[in-house]
Amino acid sequence: MTLKQKATEICNKLEKYYLDAACSLIYEKPHELMIAGRLSAQCTDARVNIVTKELFSKYKTIEDFANADVSDIEEIIKPCGLYKTKALSVVNMCKQLIENYNGEIPKTIEELTTLSGIGRKTANLIMGDVHHLPAIVTDTHCIRICGRLGLTKNKEPKKVEDDLRKIIPPEKSSDFCHRLVIFGRDICKARGEKCEKCPLKELCKSYK
Image 1: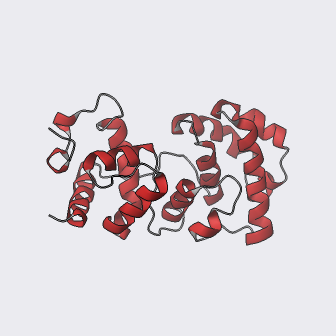
Image 2: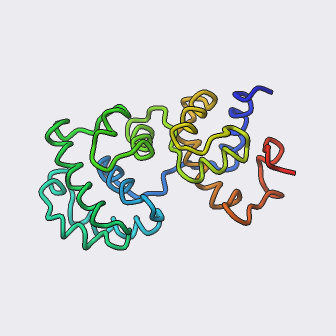
């Protein structure tokens, strides 16, 4: 079995094990996912979802955020940590969307990563969930699990992304990453992994 065949088989097994593949961040509008993605840096999605409930009820449009008082954003998002940096980048990001992209969400990784506070992880999230294009979101679950499975030897996010783009079917890539998050919380945990009940154990390099 080639590495590409193994990756496809892993995708197929995860699809059967986890029928639904959805982003764990709660949002309704594309710019909300972008902002939630920014807030999720060094913070749990569960906490971000609590914070954005208030944030998105108060600021409803890109223009609202672009015109917001940074100190007010800081106060709302404080539980997410790094709140001063994140608040400033949220406001600047929305200003850039208006000034440089006519209030539209860019459709390339290169354009998305020109926005304040947006790295490749969030850019890929937008590519997959907003634009429904191939995307590899290399969060901690993705890097850990794909390393254990033997799909990559790298730990640097960009290198892992490059490795996976070569072997994961493009049309499955975004949902694959969402399923890895569920799988990583459910079975293939950072500590206390449940190998005996794992649906991928026969394909896993680390399983003994």
